[in-house]
Length: 224
Length: 393
Image (cartoon, rainbow over all chains, first blue to last red; front, side, top):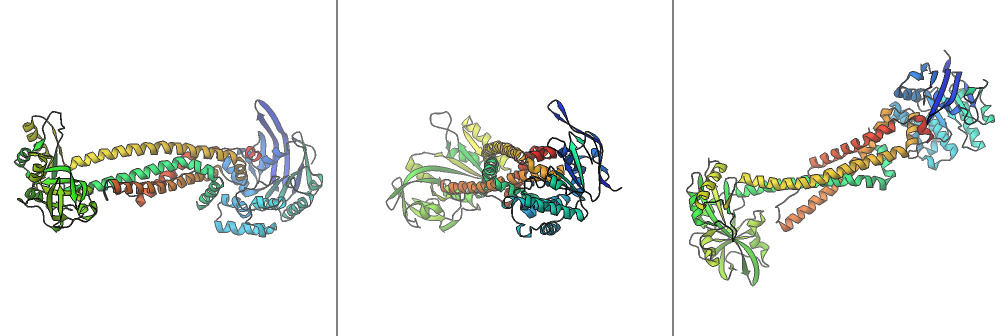
């Protein structure tokens, strides 16, 4: 099996007050190991829901989702947490760093959750921050870093437990074009090193960097 | 584990004012507990010391007669009756009066304990503290002689009173023939000891006595002898207008006083700890709400629900323990203040309060537990947050 992500007939329905709102309607999708995939769609199209499901943050209402051969629909909270910790690295539009912690500590966090020793965590976090070119800012807090720098920290954090999948949700959305390009370069490099990259964006130019573009509208995939 | 503590302390230091307000309840509660226990220990300690001074074989008989009421005062006759009881070694009558005294022109009220020289000497023989520093004990037939407590010699008057000096009691001149060692008991140290007959003569007291100190014979049960004394006196007085104290009863009396202290402080402590616990729970709930996004981030990066619970429990525990630490410090200060006040108003060494290491550790652990218990609900709330919803907040 070469697929690292597989969705079979996935439907997600949210319940808002007493109204049922379908976000995804019968999605079938396969993503192979090492692919660079862009998911594009207007807001409200269901791409964030799709992202959350692939990221094991949520379970489908119907259908099956296999992440590294595990059907997440059947997993408990803690098993989902373990899957997120080991297989998935998130890169968010809002960076989502913990403001009280330094860059180094933010990168260490997923490794703390994985139970790594303090020493190993520190070594790997420094190594990762070097990789994204932030070796001189490791003791800075997010507020003391520029947007681009923050996104680099969050990429370093996503790589902490050496996951197979990087999920990037509008990673360039809060950055200027130049910085956005730099971030895209980092993602492309990671893809070259064998990471599966799933990029959610509505920026056509960035989406085109991917080898495969998936368009989504009204909870359905348009073309693939 | 250290990570949790460091993280929680960092979280605490972010909101110092809120943390401090949250801590108030715990601080007051722990302060009350520490103060209470240290005073209790002090009272127990001083009680033991006083019993040692008095001796466990002593029985004290007081009159409960008050002027205008029914009943009689105690007299020499009662002391004699007691002396005939089986098990009584010696029955020593004592008169205590507060009288104007004069030394080198300085007038001051002093307490005079008047005794039968021969008997009292035997009564107190072997009792710690009643050792003579200088001179001799009173003798039968001494005319206008006194022995004085250490404080009277040392600083009761502006000038030191030495052997051979003369102190005036109600206008009569008395010569100092003995000075006692310091006993540590303020009453004993600042008393003037005189012959009972002379004092009664000067004050026109007839054969009345204030108190009878009884020493039981070795091998006899103090409580039983006390009971016999009660029966004999009641028969003679035809009513119970006196009270008989044994060391055991004194212990019970102090125990009652201690219980009052414990109820008051215990009440303050439990109410404020309850308020403290609610405060911590409230602060932690606010923290959970404010840090919802953070919880989402931690969950997205792989934190299990258990991990989130631990992080928040550690924080609640840390709040409790910091409050406990401040409480121990305040409790220590209050204990010291009470100690100082007791030294000043009750006499030095009467109430020695103490905050032991065990007490401090117990208080810290207790506050930690209060913190953790208060954190359970908020921590559970935090762990149950849906990561998708939490990240969106």
